[in-house]
Image (cartoon, rainbow, N blue to C red):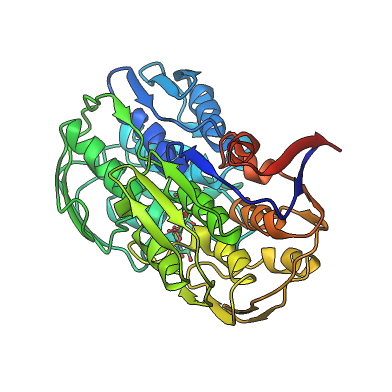
Length: 420
Ligand code: UD1
């Protein structure tokens, strides 16, 4: 097993190129199941979650080839509609194959993703929406067994809660459905918007793209003429590197980003005293005279993303004063707190709220990654801690960060991947 060794107290400098968004690549790869032609996706991040989904698609019978950041995929050879437990258990987002498989084959079996480190994370809203579209769904031996032999039917679906992968799953199902599906209270994360645009470019008539209400005209089961796709930049990876600049109070530039997608993050950093030089595809963070404490509440896009909550918590340990962080989306997304405490952070938890004392002198320790984003908070803390921090179980990080130590090293961090 590998771990990361990070020597703290180094200033960062230079620039880092941001990879394609994992959370966009995954639904787009799942959407390839709706395509009647081979497609090429570019700007695909080389991360474990992407490889897991490619493996799942290959397991179903698809042809997939990844070279650098390009994936070629042809799903016309897919024969099986069963996403088995061995692969699904490695990644919750495998559930994104449910909508497209059911819409295309009229039946499918997808293993239930099960619990996960950041909470219960049910899929009830995905299932309820598919049932409203006429699917008959049973849960059998840990599998979602879904049938819609005469195709899914367009209808009106009102999501009780905003769900990102739920919206994506139902959008893909609606694209092949019989008739018109109206989706209300849809997630409007940039990744959902990109999926809408890709489906639209493939000939699906979708109204309301970028809003919470979508109208999708289904193709009556006909497969789509999908075009080549360039995945949008990863706003969460970008936010993590901005936090790295902030916590070390260094001037660094992130390139290949869409600054508009970053607004809730840059605004929060501005409130903390940082300023920015923002160009069309890049953001330079300018050090603060004094880092101020902030209050943060996570919410759906365009609000503050839960996926950078942990990184900001590490940053708040270096602010002047006390910050309050409210986690509104997931019930158990504070696992980084106990690991940060091992490095000297003073964070008190009450329900979904964390009170973070600032001005802390963090000290290197052995710490453990617990989930993808929690782990990046530990890297940030290590950058300012005195001594050498060792972060274990970094397979969590490899799920979502491409070339992590290469990118941090290029910025001047003293970081190494070593074998236990
Ligand atoms: C996606 C992202 C993840 C991000 C999250 C919130 C991907 C692959 N993952 O996860 O990185 O942290 O959005 O921005 O894109 N819920 C239900 N029932 C459901 C579905 C969701 O109650 O059927 C609840 C969840 O428990 C959670 C909330 O809705 O409290 C939002 O979850 P959701 O948006 O579905 O998260 P994911 O799509 O799994």
